[in-house]
Image (cartoon, rainbow, N blue to C red; front, side, top):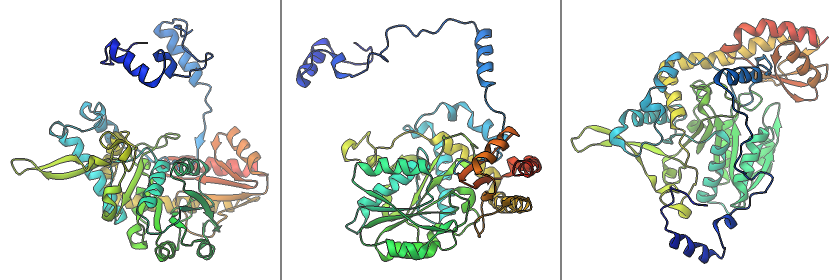
Length: 439
């Protein structure tokens, strides 16, 4: 096995193999024979027309459903300016802006993205994005372990934490030996009294979300922040830029770190693809994972932008790095920045207000249907709500899918519905369908 990109002579390769005690390069890899490449792909050759026909047939097998799905992935209208500007070659083909002298436009856009998050959260430092909200939460947990003033290794998360996010957090926690424990929820919100009885000196970080995974806006975040502060634990808050345009600023309720998915602006629903948001206090500047864009001056005194404080990343510090997350999400952050700038402050608030009134009104229409109670939780909602059905939830979901609508089943008799401006024209049809399927 040789590579035209490996600058080693045969003698150097032989010396390295001898140092690790193997006879050849193949011995360094353990690839099962059943999946090893045998030199043939086994894919018959086809012309362009045949390939297009095959692809169209495969894609045609997808269900054509109007999606009222949420739980972390949300669809908002993305204006055409986002696609048009972000598709320019200087943006689309750029990997990382290591050469600031040729990437000032991109660096400025990322600086604006960071500045928007700082303004929305009230905190001091935002990075140029993470993989997704789950990895951002994982990075917050490891940051808490490094900077905490307590002796414990416990991360407290809500009972309602989405399963996939908890699994990613558990992966992050495994290496440094952190323990993930849950605290109870009451009517879709944090049970603050139960949390007070759970938190102790062994807790390094408390995580809460607003809105919660069930769409409920937390009403006692300041109390959660005070509990964390009383026990010298970090308070990490999960949210997103649209919600933060309307809700109280995380800094005002004592949050030390804010994480979440910023892809609700700029990309829409992408079925797992996200844009991790990470914002924190200046005290933890040197502990921030990922990349930062800073503003400075060039040799002629003009404002200039550059990647800064890069010593944290593995391409410099390697095993001494505080984080090994290093992928470039900057193009997605660029799209979020363009979308937010296009909306402007007033437009962003208008969108956030619509995310409150639309699910409220749709829940009221559901509640008028015999056999449905909505919303289940007594509180303000953002984008989505949970409804109780007399029929089993799974049967309701399947019948709604047959009628052309997708919603979540979240309990034996609980369904969850997300409503945004994108689904507005389909709401009448969904209400009609739910009326029929719950009979």
